[in-house]
Structure formats: C-alpha cells, structure tokens
Image (cartoon, rainbow, N blue to C red; front, side, top):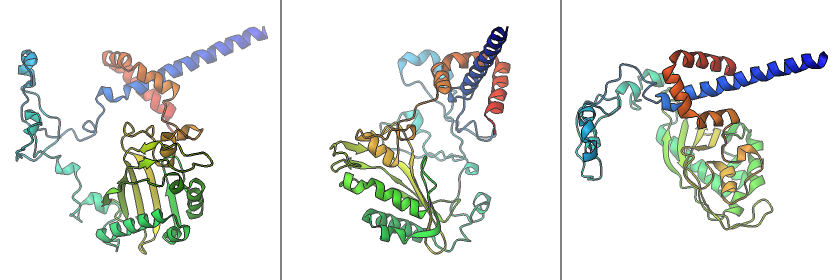
Length: 331
C-alpha cells in the first residue's frame, strides 16, 4: 500500500515537471525574435517610416511587384533630404534611403546639455574633467597596463576601485593585480596586439570612457606551465570601459564584453578565457567555454518554427504561457 502511494506521488510529480518544462519551452519560444521582437517593436507606435517605394530586383519577382512597390523601409525617420552615392554596389532602393535618420526622439544630442535624458544621469556640467582629457587619461591608463609593471598600474587605482568582466569580478585592486600576475599573458603572447579603437565618452556617465579592442597574435610562449602552441588568436571585437573620479583615478574597469560572438576563433569568448580557448588551452569550467544553451532553451530553439505556428494560431495560449513564464522566472 505504501509502495503504491509512493508510486502515485512520484507519477504526479513527474507529470507536474513535464507540464512545467513544456510551458517554459513554449513560453521561451513565444518571446523569440521570430515573432516580431526587434528594436523597432520597442519604439513608440508613432514612429514615422520612409516613404520611398521598393521595386523588385529580378524578373522572377515580377508577379509580386505590385506588393513590393508599396512596401517601405522599416526605419524611423524625420530626414527627407537624400544623399547621392557614388558606390554602385548599393542596391538602388536602399541607396534611395541614404539621408534618412532615426527620429530625434530616439537619438542623443551630445552637444545639448539641456537634453533631459542626459541631465537625468550624471550631467556633463557636474564633472570637472572635459571629454578630451578623459580620453587622454584612458589612453594613459591603458599604456600603463601594457608595461606589466604592478607599481605603474597600481598607482592609477582609487581606493574604491572595482574590476568587472562578464563572468569575473567584481574585484578590488588587490585581487585584480593578483589575477593579472597569475596568468602572465605577456609571456604567453609576446606579439599580442590589442588593436585599441573607438575611444569615446559615455553621454550618460560622463566620467566614463568606452573603447573597443580586438586581440590578434600568436601563442609563442609558455602558458601556465604548458608549452607554446604557436597557434594564432583572433578575438571578436570587445567593449571595454574606464570610469574616473574627479582626481583622475580609476574607479571602475570593465573588459571582455563581446559584440559579435560569431567572429574570431575564441569561441565567442572575450578576455583571457577567449585567448586560452583559441590556442586549445580552454579552462575546465562552463564560463570559460563557448556558450551552450540549457536543455530547456536548447529544445525550445530547435522547435522554434513549430511553436511559433502554434502561437500564431492560438494567441490566447501564447498569452497564457507568457504569463506563466514570467511568474515562474520572476524574482
């Protein structure tokens, strides 16, 4: 009798688990990009669109020319002036769109100190170091890092310094310096080039400088006790930032935020983890390996088309699943 009751309870638990997994899977799919989730769907419904018509680019599409001639480029715009191009490779209907820009409501005017979106955060008028000097400070701090000298690097840090990467940190200055010495990247990659570019001051946090890097080079030295592989490295472009206080000291340093995981040969990883993976010395934990979806989300993605069709045919089911997903996943 006890065994039978235990079996019934076990089956019920399994049924509940299956139902929950199925709901989560379906809900994940209902939030997928394929159902119209894009930057445009997040903007105001009052967005205006370019009115230039499109025409078919091949004779095979002549049967649908009446439809394509009335379609428009999905780009919010207030600019009507056209810019002529001498680049013949641009498709004519797209070339017609040159000169169109996003509506000013969705763009930041960095020259306008009265812009409410800027004044709501750290106003440029309250931070004493001008933008050009901030960029010079950021470059000088970066130059100090390339020396590999702990004393030279350490003098830049404020007492409240924090180092933050996608899966590493936050570290204080002592932890950060210890982590640098533990890898000795300069010995492992003597010709590593960071390819620094796109230095700019954040319009929202005007004491913060953003810039980009793209590591290229070859592993020609020992790596954590292992021999050089002589394999080349090409990382994705990564966003990094340096935040300063009024004394010009670094209060926060962020690295390794990959912009496009499909580029390079680091498995989509940034920072040191990406370098090690590219030369075959990937570290043995998930955060240092290329991204893999969870079983539930992976299954959802594989069944994407099927579930999208179900949701399109049953909008009520979609809303119910969405509500359930946000309830289960909520804090």
